[in-house]
Image 1 (cartoon, one colour):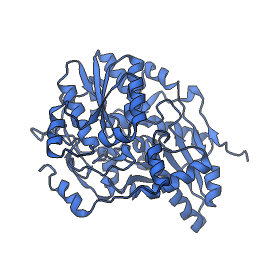
Image 2 (cartoon, rainbow, N blue to C red):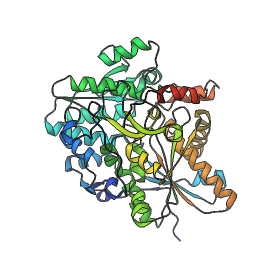
Image 3 (cartoon, rainbow, N blue to C red):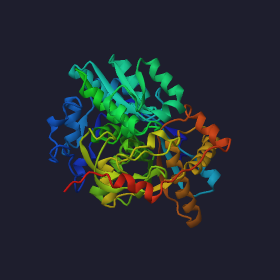
Image 4 (tube, rainbow, N blue to C red):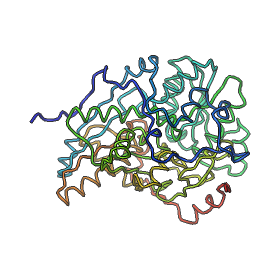
Length: 455
């Protein structure tokens, strides 16, 4: 039998030409987003002041199974796609496990993460509509970096509201965004009404993705020719990220493999949703016995400790409300180093799948995550992003279970990006300065008590 290569690449002509819309195959749809003023389900046109029209249409489309990827987007995809599917032989050997471990590596591009997949699409549609600028938020900076690159490519001005603790922790991410001409603002800021209000209530806040979203949306709605784009959570983003799972599935089929377990880190849900999409379709439609595991930080455990309820997607409560697993829009997580996972809620699609029992969720403290990140770097020669390392931790745990039982399971996880802009975090870990923070039930109750009252 021919040995499976360490790194397996599809050919350029095997890049998917369509995105896959998982909602078209779900047995039950996620509950609709609500207009916060009327509590009525949103209509597509209600989103036009926030998103460009095509993205608003994609957000509301739950019936079109496959959506053609425009040639202009494919042209830029070909710069860095297809991304490799890697067999973690060295990690398997280190763990002495009979399990086969694969990872889909999305850090092999100029932005260093999977975020570029959706950034290109969203900027393309904004440019096509004739918009003159866009705004966004970013946590750890991967989304802001990817979007700034896409905006530079399509010549569209960008303002990025970057979560304040990440703005301070990751100055080089900020420098990359500025290299691509993005205007980077630490959030919360005094440049928006909602930012000023948040600072008045909590002058020392380290910020959150919810805060940054509020500021970006306000900027978009008050600026002519401007719209807001988001790097996670939304249906449209999971649609664009389905290219990850589609490539992974095609590659595994060529290699004669199929995963027993699919694992992804989970903050808002973009990477996880994109990776699992075609495999989840197999489970829903064909009854394939695939296990899915979402992995989140113990400091921001929306799935494992959140409530399944309608909530605002932002701290300033200016966005529509979504039915999701949430810690409350007012929850401000600790300034942990996995900035991309510091969001109070989870994608409505993933929340519905989790609620209906199609997948599981686990959470880990960041010191345990960095222990496995360091091991992974040593044996696989890639320094993983803190966010991705949550998935690595879970994959290792599952592989060790196989060592105990002797089961030869096939594990697939998403390596969302590299950690070369996260050296302050690695230094804190190696110097013994990294601390774990897990919110108490009383901490969570404060935000739960402020959830909107929806009949």
